View 1 (cartoon, rainbow, N blue to C red):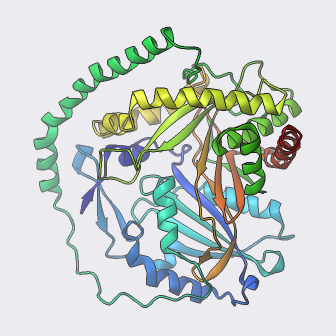
View 2 (view 1 turned 135 degrees about the horizontal axis):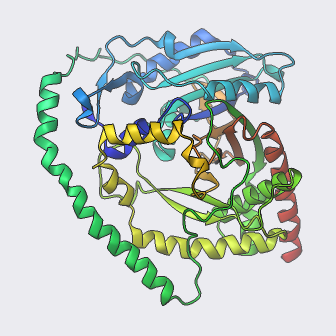
View 3 (view 1 turned 90 degrees about the horizontal axis):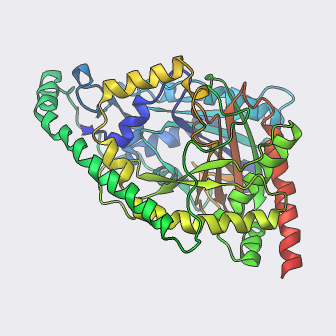
Length: 467
C-alpha cells in the first residue's frame, strides 16, 4: 500500500466528465523494418511478462473513507490483462486522418478508476504492414519523465527480445482497513494546518519577484497569468478530442538552434508559435498580443521530495504569435525564457508540490465540478492559451515489445479555458509533434500540424542565410 502525494492526487481531484486528465501516446511500429512478424497474441503475452517491472500498471486506487485524506495505491488482485489491452482495425481508407480520428476517440474516453489506470489499444491495418499502439495512462501515475522511464521497461535496443516470466508470484495482499485509514487521516489532520505556513512563504516569493522586476536590468521575465488574449480554443471544453501529429528532423531543429544561439526548447516554442499564428490567421482570429503557453518543467533532479510520481513545475512563456518574422520570434522567445528560468528558480522547484500536499480532496473535487458545470473558464480572463511540453526521448532505435518504433507522438491533457495542448518528443533523430484539442473548439486541428513543416523550413532557410 502506498499513499498518493498531493500533486499526484490533484490530477484525480481536478478531473471531471469533460476535463479528462490522462496522457496518451501513439506509437507506430514497423515489423517489416527488421523482418519481425507481428502477432497480437505474442505482443500481449510479452507485455504480461514485463508487468512486474512496472508496479504502477498493476495497482489500483483505494479511497480513504469520506475522502479525509489522499487515496492509496493497492495491488489489483483481480488484474485482467485482457481488459487493459484491446485490438481493432483501422477504418478505411486507413490513412493518417483515420488514425488521428481513432486516437482522438480513445483519448476522449475516461479511464475506469476501479482498475489500474491505463489502457493500450493495438490498431492494425496501417499501410506497409505497420501497426499503431495507442497507450493511455492517467496523469496520477505518470509525468513526462516517469512516462518515458516506464516505456523503457517495455522497449529494447534490438528486435525480437522476449523476457522470462517473473520467478516468483507476488504474495497475496489484503484490502486496506477502512476504519484504520479513517483514524489515521483524522490523526494527521493537525498537520494539514501547515497550509497556513505556505501563505507567508508565497507572499515572500511574490515580493521577491516584484522587487526583481523593479530593480531589473532589462532582462525579460515570465508573462503574468490571466493576461493571455482569448482565442477560439480558450473556452469551456467537452470530453470530445481531436488529434493531429507530424514528424520533423531533429537535425534541422539543432541547426536552427546553433545558427541563432538559442536552446532547442526555444526553437520548439517558436515552431509551435508560428504554426498557431498561421492557423489563427487562416481563421481571422489572430490576437494583436502574443499567445501565452504554460510550459511544464521537470523537477525530478531538483526536488527535495523523494516520494510520488509527478515532480513538475511550470513556466509561462510568450510564443510571440504577434511577430511575423520567424527569426525575430525565436530570438524574442529565447530572451524571455532566460529571464523566466531565473524567476522560476526564485519560486523554487517544489512550490506546486508543497501546496498540493495540503489539498483537501472534497473541496478540490467540488470546486473542479462547479468550475466545469458553470463554464467559468468563459467568464474570467484567460490564464494561459495552451500547454506546450517538450519531453526528451531516446536518440537511438527502440523496439517496443520486440518491434521497431518508427514514430512516437505524445498527447497531454487539455483543460477548461485552455483547450489545446502541444507535446513534442525526440525519437531517434526525429522530433515528433502531437497536438490534441477539445474537438468542438479545434475541429480542424490537422491544419496546425500541417503548418509545422512550413515554419521549420522557413526558420531553416533563415538559419542557413545567417551562417
